[in-house]
Length: 388
Image 1 (cartoon, rainbow, N blue to C red):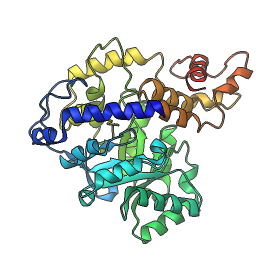
Image 2: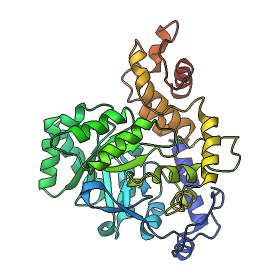
Image 3: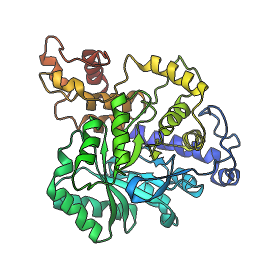
Image 4: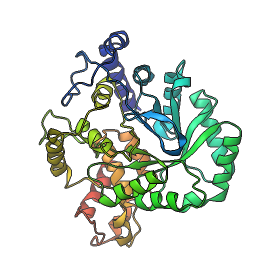
């Protein structure tokens, strides 16, 4: 709790340093600034780019190609500045920040709700629980409807076909509380995306997918197939962990990584997490910017730097673990701790593992294998040390 308060205080001071009024007067349109933005340049003049839109699949919603991932944003003012300058899609969830994130988003939406599309999530499957989750979200967000309600964190196709889940979603739609349905997936995205397409009912309208320059080719192929089926694709984890690396020095790979994801026309939008004004400025600046040779070089250097420890969350390793350890979820927790620098999110995600890294202690030798060559035994030992 002390760390969380300290972090929130620093973000607020950083935000106030930039100044709401000063920022609002400076963000008056014009072209996006060129080059990589240093996160330390909070007080520098900044011209907000003209919004660029793509259509979110069969929903028909025209949303900005860089939208707002609110998962770690502690200040509603940061979200409000983005919304006041054209960003029109915000993604949140009941589980973020222990339930507080929806309240923060709700405050940012005051006076802006009619020009913003709102997405949140449920982890439930039972009909009564899905409806309860949605109604709790509506209250926290202080709104009468959710534009996209997503089934949270699918790791396979099973939840796509649960009839009572669909019944709950349809009831919420009939009541005008939810407009469209989606799913999110960190692990095994190819199976999930293909199942959405193969579903004879084509029930779900959108998919929030982990996708970045480190993703396997088959993920891009599954995204293309889903996009052809008019499923709106939203990209997350576009920054491949957002690690700080000595190889890049003060250069940030974030803009290059975002531009890489958005060069795929099958992706409607990316939702980078933006905690403060520095991150907002850095990420939003790429709206309309092409992916360049300089970006490619930055990503090549960043890729080489994180190769020894970055997990693409493909999930293929888990079938090789005799203990059934949820290696992908644990590696994602480590990424939140070491890349995102969010201990709270890391520990809450780690707590979702049904079989944690502690099970590895019973093995004299790790036999789980990674298709990318990661040292799984070392990663699990690191998790036990960092996450408990």
